[in-house]
Length: 146
Ligand SMILES: [Zn+2]
Image 1 (cartoon, rainbow, N blue to C red):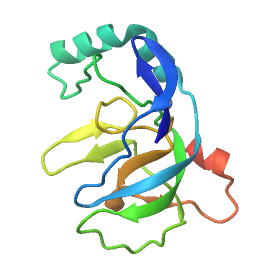
Image 2 (image 1 turned 90 degrees about the vertical axis):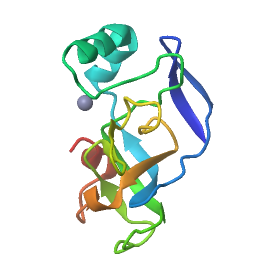
Image 3 (image 1 turned 180 degrees about the vertical axis):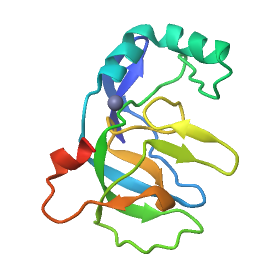
Image 4 (image 1 turned 30 degrees about the vertical axis):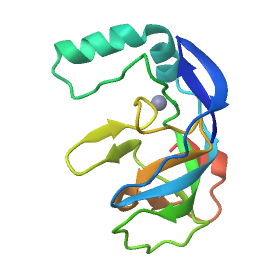
């Protein structure tokens, strides 16, 4: 997929692997994504952020030698289901979610992770259980800010 990638303290547009959903995860297509002040700070001060996380025993980790697809304020369209999903919502449904990706024994911050791409990419992974359908009448841009 095409994405704006944090690489070498810069944002560049390049191709990255399409995300593959794990159990309970879904693939969504980004429709809109805000640019948060946190993204701008992380782009400039990522080493400080990582060091602060280490000092506070936070589970947060980010490898700056690998790509990061930022973007944690998004509205997306449901595309596909990983194994074990209930598939209650139909593909094409507009959704939002907490910007976290849960695995069997881990949690990643969507957009601040090497394995949980954010909304600056064409596709993201989210957890089916955390999806909220965008209610009728709310624009995609406004939903992204929720
Ligand atoms: Zn934010």
